Image (cartoon, rainbow, N blue to C red; front, side, top):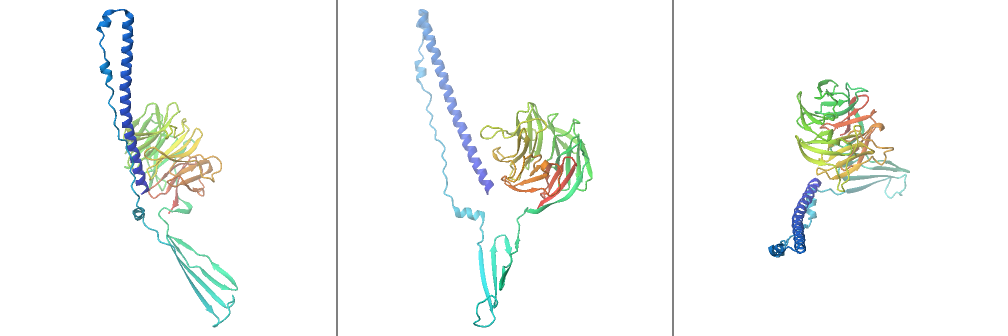
Length: 435
């Protein structure tokens, strides 16, 4: 519902922007025509003055007035400006669309057991039990029982919740560890799930390797140029994508055949992801390292460029080869970038239209600086922990109990298990953090 409302509002804004551009074009055209006429009149006046000052009678006799031409003013524009006609909101219909919430019901029953009829009320002669039944959405509570004998003893209620899907578990756990062939001088820095059982990895050499969850290497692909890939991703159809920053290309691997789908000039391709709709989102830096932008490609065709906010300010930091900006698309189809460059250490999230939704610079409990090196959630490498956010950028929790050592690349499978690449140990660790 929220997404549909946002889409409708964005359509209205887009329609209004289109009408504004159309109206502005008409006004600009009319202004240009008026300026041309003013220029012509000024030239005619200059010619007349020149004729008068020349004492050349033939010029005076050959003069023809153009007053009639310029008496015709430009047509007057009659514009009906658009107006928004809000409809009365029917709260009842909205409520029906959302559904209903059952009421809180409290039923209290009192049972008194007396030693004998007419006995006095004292702690020693009364056994009192209170049973409270709560009908509460999403939870079932056991009865609250109080036995009274001189002193009250209370058994606290035990809550049994029926959790929603993907509820965060209390303590994340490591499911699998995969040892790769990367090492200290060939650090692992990119990972991407092919499916729930296989994962691609890349690092400081020209080889990209496919592993299963048992740690077996299934395939090795070398880059076309022989240079190391900057980043990797997997398309919806299962093809491997990699960026070659030195060659300025984005390449797709089909079986063993490598094809360059994007070639850049003046820009270097860096980090990449494949969207749910099958398009590519590419982070690129300018050759002078002064600009960074995100570009959406459909095949080899550029569809959209995202670089500035509504105030014309850069959304992303600029910087050189050492600055990382991993990118992913979340299930809202928002575009998320972990920006760790030129003093900017944050996560930047924009919607499909490229409008800034929020930035995240660390939770309130984060001590010290925040340095993201990967995005699926977000990793905090030197603090050896992972931040998990909700779709609106609200901090949910850390994963800091899995003994991570410099977490770098991140990705998730279809079951929302998290895969973490460790820079130095070169292990890929599979972590379950929700139900």
